[in-house]
Length: 368
Image 1: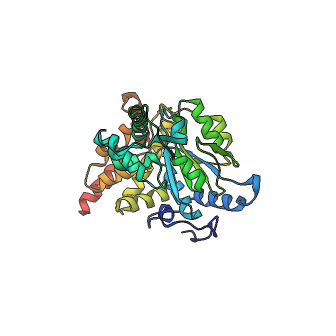
Image 2 (image 1 turned 90 degrees about the vertical axis):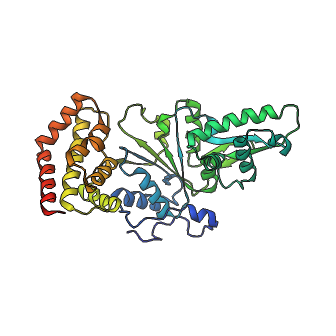
Image 3 (image 1 turned 180 degrees about the vertical axis):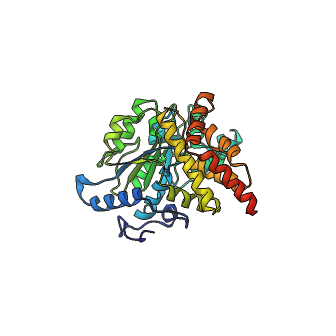
């Protein structure tokens, strides 16, 4: 494990109790990776070097390669509150900046739909510590994308309700603005799915080291402690390459592949509680072969850590190794019969089908 204070970036900074709660706490199962060490050293080394400062990181890799875990680990190491935004295709500028909502009188509020009422009430009572989207996600129990949509519907309804009335408006900043202004570590997940170029431009300008964001109420400047960690998936259908201007604003990039077999085994033990080294080894090897084969043959899906965890877990619960291999791993990569044949061939060539059968027989024999 890393020393707790080795990489703290602003030791003199005073955080509120609510902000301290947002700093990620590393679980006992967390294993420090090479990438984590490298990023922490680089950021710490350059932190006070003006234009050489590193504060925008890109983690590009397969689903399940540990990108979000790494982003959270950086929050723990740097002592910065962690927050995230998950991008979606039809994101618009208000999702980057925030929304202006009219404050509706209580008489009018009572005439509105109960769900809308409860959301508006929660927004009016919020202390600005949470973004509007977050308040909505909590009150309605919905995803970020659904909350963004709901916010737009609510704006329309609220404006209709207000016609001909003198109103007071309140601005609710987005999660991005909050992190940018207060100096948090923000994970921006999948910005490559955003369709609207104007939205990407707004994001780009926010990522300038001395950037500022024009809000309807004021201009805010980038907090010196703000770190943006962009996480994107490589190689899956529907993912466009990351916008070049966005890429250009990144000062450090990590290509996240499957970790080493040792790390895979350690993580699987911690995640599933299953400790049979021989089984973990063979299953990890199979995942690595499938991953390599899928790439070499331009098969779009991914054999990653998540598939490995679920496969190990199914095996530990007594499922057949080969049968669960299809449901937890192969069908997740592809259900195309030609592609499945290529993957099966690769496993046979490496003797892995036999190995999986052997360890199963061994386990049954020893009654383990």
